[in-house]
Amino acid sequence: MRYTLLGALMAAAGTLLTCYVLWLAKGCKAFLPFISDLGLDGAMGVCFQYGLVLGAVLLLLTFGDATFVRHKLLRAMRHSRWIAWLWMMLNLVLFFMGCLIALAVGAIGFLPWDHALQPHLVCASMIFYGGTGWAVGNALLLRRLGQENSIISLCSRRWMRQAQWPLLAISLASLVLMFASLATHFSDPSEFKEMLALARTDFQAYCNDSDHPDLAALFEWILVLSLVGGVFTVLADLEVFLAMRTDDFSSLLARERPGETLGQQRFFCGTED
Image (cartoon, rainbow, N blue to C red; front, side, top):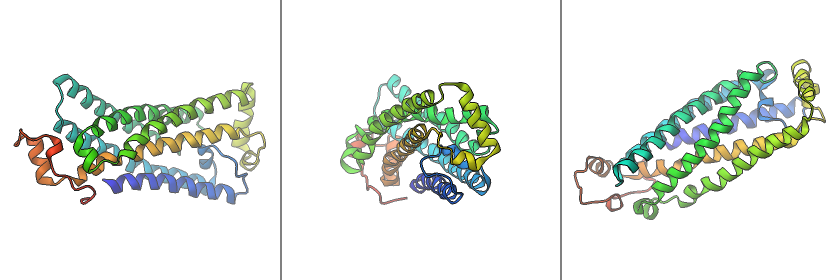
């Protein structure tokens, strides 16, 4: 489970880094392309497409793992009937949001914005807005599960559970600042159409254009990196599941020892995979 998560993050980071190196190798200016600019031309575009597909597949598996683990942990905790239902529903909603995000990540490389602007914007919106919404739910679940004494005392990852909140704040601020920068830069819609035409007809001129909205691109990078960081925080719950002994977990879920709480079960943080 942890290796699927780490693999998804490494695939995404490796793809972006490789494409950025190819961007520089083409003689493009270093500061700063939009992330989607890395998929506009030649071998760089192919790397962008298939690297993101690999990352999307691993990301989808990660969301599935997180949903399964959290379902098990939430079942093992004592709630009132309606409160338990609400947490279970939130976990399920996050899974479906994660599926849409993974789908958008896998598809966006095949929908370059210079030739398929509208579908590209749909995918980007699913990643930006969907990712931010997922981060809100993720922060709530991390906080709730982190309130259990066994998790805090024996396998806390406290810093990881708390990290989602500042990352969420960074995501929201970056999202607002990115659109504000774009609105300021393209005061006239014709200016955006000119940039679109330049990217479509003369990539080399586009990637060295001094009028490129670099500040908006910077905020987009910060937004995406903060969303990726939020996905990493899921590891806090995965580690709890992997650290619990199989026989203890089975008996806990079966309620064979109803006198014991989750905090009385034995955990061995990080010993199993």
